Image (cartoon, rainbow, N blue to C red):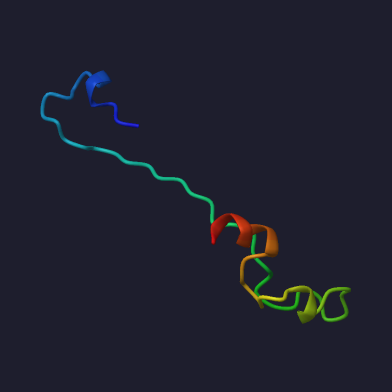
Length: 60
């Protein structure tokens, strides 16, 4: 969104502030969360720290 026309101090036409927000997607845990947990490496087919199957559809 470009709002220089609505800014009262826009005579110098200097950009003072920009804020960018993005989402990185859901990822697998960085390592095995629990030593005796129900999920092991086979639950995360792309590997640790990688996008989940659902996120892969949206971001790749």
